[in-house]
Image (cartoon, rainbow, N blue to C red; front, side):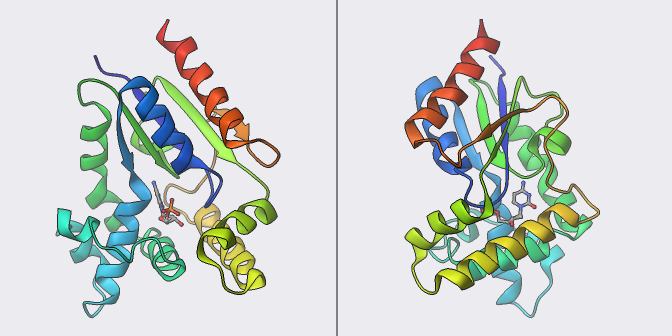
Length: 198
Ligand code: DC
């Protein structure tokens, strides 16, 4: 069975948590596509900076690095993600993953719009910048104002780039998690998927 769930949205909206829960609930494979861009950003940063070569030569070891979740890696990812050749180099891997047997959930910024416009389910998970920054701050600590500034800067770059900008697909279901518990957000996502599987 091929069944693709596309989950897009801005940083720290809850996409990762929802994606993992949905994958476990329906037995789907999960790909965190942000990790691909993070790995490219970190690798290029440490290699005299050729992000296109880093994307073309990405290996499983690059994706297993422990420093991919840092704020710096998020910023580096957002910067290399504006480069069309980087996005192109990562495209086929994501499309193949999406159509694997047994179902797949991919989370990112352009899954429903560019990578899998034919996805059976498209969700756009969002929340206010303040709520997202607070969640990120609980994870990483440090100066709360700096974390908010980082979230706002990354949103601006991800939404305003020319290539595959962050935006909901026309037929995406929007889930705003600003005032929702994790359980309620996961339940809303699972309901949408169950509806389309009937
Ligand atoms: O989801 P994340 O925070 O791990 O993503 C890190 C950055 O990677 C994000 O700011 C923009 C980029 N990205 C992208 O452009 N397209 C995707 N499908 C996923 C991430």
